[in-house]
Length: 348
Image (cartoon, rainbow, N blue to C red):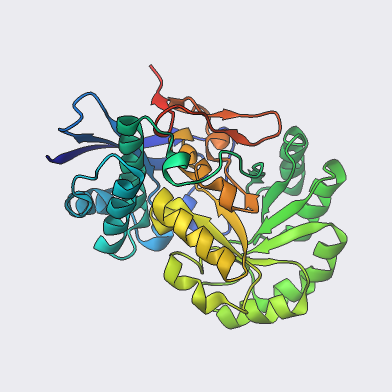
């Protein structure tokens, strides 16, 4: 009884440029992600699919992911095709090595897909969760204010927009977006602000109806996060400062919310546990994503019922999604079905 894995690196064009305040996204024209196929010789007709996004900010590349896949497979063992079996295997993968969230996410997602298919259950049921989560917002990258506003106008059907900030024209950009869009605005600086910049912007953010501020400061400046949260009723949400479950305790009393991403914490199993623990600690919960295909977003959607806010727009940012089976409903919630596993397949 052995597991085997095959991985593929996908370099996919984006539908429109998507840039953030850090440079690792390059020109913002393409995204790179890794998909895996997992097989268990006990179930010769079943293939578990998973996706992991290599985030260079956390030191991951497709090459580092490939290097740790064999270790993670050994840790996974041969899980029994039950909720208890996949829970135990997921915990073993999580403990096998620290960090390497993208690699663990690919393996953990594929394990859940494989066990779900082998047992005839959708992944959200294996996790003991409901099928309905919050609607997703839509993200707009850094660009000229008029360009961002035009993209906001085209995305005006979404119940909220997430605006990337941390550039030279944050206020004009938000004002231009507000002129064409009346819903909630969520701003994400991706570590790009300083305390003086944040304090100067804060009154205008409130006037413009901003709903939350995500990761304004560099990762190590938890003190800056705490000071800004003390100065405003707007929720400050930690993203890059909150990678894995162990980070939660240190953020209690620092910020109002945390952004949990499968590519950071290691897949649907760890994400479900992290979201539950965050709620126990009193955090407001945000479920985020990278520029993943609908394979990765299907795994995230399986745990979305534990989140208050969702930013699960990865496949909507792609020029062409190579997977099918996940549908965005008219209310902008991802529709989870009773199909076994993650419910998605590679397009023919």
